[in-house]
Structure formats: C-alpha cells, structure tokens
Image 1 (cartoon, protein in one colour):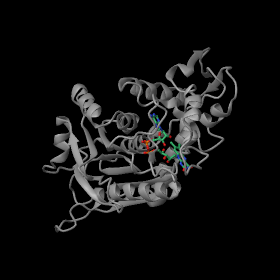
Image 2 (cartoon, protein in one colour; image 1 turned 90 degrees about the vertical axis):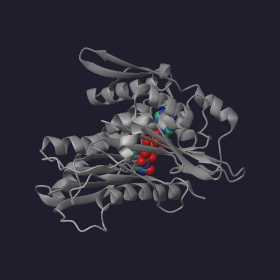
Image 3 (cartoon, helix red, strand yellow; image 1 turned 60 degrees about the vertical axis):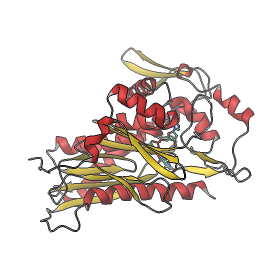
Amino acid sequence: MKKNRLMFTAVLCLSLCTFLYGCDDTKSEKTTEQVSTKVQGKTMGTFYAVNVVGGYKGGEQALTELAENCFKKICDEISTFDKNAELAKFNEFKSTEPFEISSDLSKIIQDTVYQGRRIDDATDITVGPLVNLWGFGINKRNDSAPSPEQIEEVKKLVGFDKFELRFENHKNYLLKKDPDVRLDLSTVGEGLGADAVAEELIKQGYKNFMVNVAGASRSYGVNAEGRKWKLGIEDPTSPTPKLFAPICALDKAVTTAGSYRNFFKDEKSGTVYSHAIDPKTGYPVSHKTLSVTVISDSAFEADALDTGLLVLGADKTLEWGEKNNYPLATIEYKDGKPVMRHTKQFEPYLKCGSETANK
Ligand code: FAD
C-alpha cells in the first residue's frame, strides 16, 4: 500500500470534514443565511479553507491572496520540502559554523522548543533525520521499516542539545552540533498558517469566520446561519470520512494530531508505522492512541503540543491536561472500537449552547 496516497486521502477527508461541519451544521433547520466568502486551496502539501461570514471585501480573489500570502511567508521560513526555504537551507548546511536566520524563524524555533519542553520533550524538532529515515520527509520512499542499527545511528543526531540558537550583534544564528543535524517544524506549520490568516482577518475587523489548514482550525463568532461554529473530530477508524464527535470551537483554536492519517505498512511484517515519531526510541508510536485534539487560544500552541501528546499516549495526555488546565480529548482503539476520553476542561466544547454573533 502506498503511503503518499493514504496521506493524501486522509488529510483531504479531515480538512473537508472539519470544513463541512463548520459550515453546515444546521442544514435541516430553516434559517436566514448571510452571504459568505469561501475559498479553498492547497498549501504545505495539504488543504486549506477560509470562510468569512458577511463577505470579504474584494471577494474570493482577495481572500485567496490574503491566505496564500500568509502561507507563503511560513513556507519560505520553515518548509523542509522547498530547498529554497530558510530551514531547508540550514538543514543542507553541512557545517557546525553559525548559520544566520531571520528573527521570525528564531522565534518559531524557540516557541516550539518551549512547548516540547512542557511535555517531556515529546515534541522534538530535531527528529528531522528520523523523519527522513522513516520516509516521512522530502525523500518519501518507504514500504519497509529501517533496521534497528540505522535507527540507533540516526538517533545520535536527535535531542535538544544537538543545536543552539544564538543572538549576536543584533543577528540570529543557528548552530548544529553535528553537520548532519536536521530540524523539522512540520508539526507546527498548519497551526502557524491558521493563526496567521485568523490574525489578519481580526486585524481587518472581521468577527465571524473559520480558517482550516488540514487538522488545524481557528474560528471566531458564528457561521452564516448565526450559529456557533461546529467542528468534527473525525472517527480515526473509519475508512471514509465520518464524524466521531461534534464540538463547538467557541472562538478557540482546535488542532488534531492523528496516527491514522499519515502512515505506511511494512510489506514484510504488516506493521503499520505512523508519522508521529517518539524521539526517545527513534520509532513511530505503536500504542493504541489514534488521535489527540487540543483546544487553545493559539493554533500554533495547540499544534506544537498535539503531536508530542500523541507520542505520550492517552493516559499521559489526559493527566498532563488536567494538571495544566487544558481542554484535551483523545481517541484510543479499545476492544475493537474507538473510545474517546477528555479532560474536564473539554466539556464546554461538547455542549453547544445559545448563539450570539460577534458584533
Ligand atoms: P502533525 O502531527 O502536526 O506533525 C507530524 C509531523 O511532524 C511529521 O510528519 C514529522 O515531520 C514531524 N514529527 C513527527 N514526530 C515528531 C515529534 N515527536 N516531534 C516533532 N515533530 C515530529 N508535504 C508534502 O508532501 N509536500 C509538500 O510540499 C509539503 N510542504 C510543506 C510545507 C510546510 C511549510 C510544512 C509545515 C509542511 C509541508 N509538508 C509537505 C508536510 C505535510 O503537509 C505534513 O504532513 C504536515 O505538515 C504534518 O502535519 P500533520 O498535521 O499531518 O501532522
């Protein structure tokens, strides 16, 4: 089975599900719909959708431009798929000498490391060499797992001590401890994208909109029917798009990391390997936690946490969420079916109350 194809289908499903639930949750009721400007397209190897209720000045073309300018800036900074991006150039820089980077990239790295540190280093941006070894990076290839020896060798390049950020003479630098160290910020790309578009719309005075970049969303106010935006947590066990639990986003960012969306099956052993890699073992996660949904003020923060929490698994995720007061939900595979658990802070998002538009 080809991994690329699975990834394409699954990401499409999630983004479209989220988008549809966001827009059409009240189809059966008679309501007066406001005009909306809706656009969708591709970015970061996945899909995006933006819906501005009440219409966007300049219409679809201007809204597409707004979104794609935001995404381009992020891609130019953090892509490991575009050799001209800042991070890709750093990864190709086979030296331990200082490499000058922009202050924006420096901030993204610092903030992502900070979030990873909060969850026992489970989100670790030095997984780059492991991501490539397992075939989830630019050199997509695998239909079989690498050998334990290869994994041990590559693990030597992984860990927060394998690179350094330096600020000198008003300039930002990144330094590798080994010329083969590679950083990977793919885990936060979608969250950064959703935040960038949402913040631009807020700055321009829009009060009712939804932005989706695959598994990351930012919504604000109400939908075209004057009702609170609803999102769907997808059933990770269904081969076709299926809603597992509807949630109200309540003006927050929602992101989901899933081990079921991007994976490959080892042709010899039949083992399924997901793209969420445990930096401590060097192996993709193999427990029964299928997805982790995080709600936060910032899609970046939620996105930086969700992959690491998926690596930690449902028990540790929920324990961390209760302790740190986070709305989190997990879906695990138990007794042949998907089972959702959540922190008590998640409860308000499961109950959609009365709606009022942001005026
Ligand atoms: P998430 O769970 O949010 O992130 C998983 C990804 O994070 C993994 O794929 C891996 O790269 C990394 N990761 C795995 N384990 C860890 C860990 N423990 N700690 C930290 N990171 C980890 N894909 C393409 O096929 N073509 C493209 O042109 C392309 N361009 C991109 C450009 C940008 C700017 C970005 C950010 C991504 C791009 N991608 C591209 C990647 C693709 O869309 C990824 O699958 C996606 O970013 C991962 O997001 P996710 O929500 O699927 O998974």
